[in-house]
Length: 186
Image (cartoon, rainbow, N blue to C red):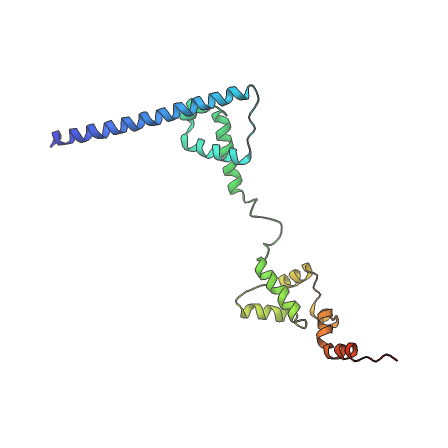
């Protein structure tokens, strides 16, 4: 039984050695390419964008400190790993997701509140709230008030007293048509 595994071990060892050799050739090529690019830069310092730092730091963390000591050319291993620590800290500090106050309402929901208020001028905050809950959306009365205020829409009592041009024209269309079409010059 032991003699049957030896040819298999030989094949596995040969393939692993060949793959390792291929990887080493690729690494040697990339290192030489880096040297050529550094020679073309001269003594100038490389400037990285945040995206480039993020990509390099992610790869550096996967490679590990010991390997970075051998292969890192464009930044020191300490710098690469410090970038990674800073990126991880930024990822979990929540600054991108948090702002002052409560989270904003979804844009579609905000548009729906505005549309309901404009199409139904006599509806107050509570009536809009009821219509939204019938549609499966749940907002607070104060949120509806804030949305309407943000869009320059007055509360229901003030909206009822003000007539828009569209409403005026629709209500008086028959009179306007009669006045414009059937005038007699004296």
